[in-house]
Image: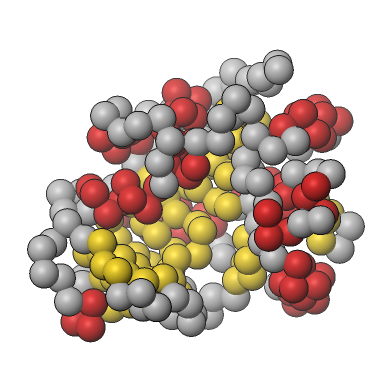
Length: 257
């Protein structure tokens, strides 16, 4: 498979990565014939919506990882080469690397002087991505994770300063944390949004990690020594379009946002 890489330099460049490699199993049978990234909401593919949102918020380099029906995504991007941004492909066709492994593989495609905004392809939101990016820069965070108080089974745990301290599954009682004896009940509990920013200085910490791993596991490993923080947007509106039932709600969502 060919990999499309465009080498363009932008002054004051803001860079992002779109996680678009997933199998989209929750969207079957649609994803039996196409990648989740090209599923349409109100006639527009999810990937196109995220690219245009990033472009509108000032991002000029975007890396897209591909695996499931990867050639369809490459063909789509080739046919729509007028997005006006530097789009690079990280090819995971041989093996799906999960979120952490995908970011590690793509690390060479990023400028090492600027944070990377990471956005799941199936997330719709009212988030000002430029504002979020500028906050990460101003606070000099190693990781800034957009989180919310929505109901779920799996939560990230934060201290009073919104520093990440752990993770818990309230259905099973499982806790993951670099802090022995962490009590989830004494922490602030938030759900992850699928939107986060990472400083390229953490790529060095990924070198000893395996080829395939989840990004949350990585954040939980480094949070005791790195500045990994959560950010709560009070008026956040967010929809995960990863399931068939939410896909039915997505058209109304985008018309309101």
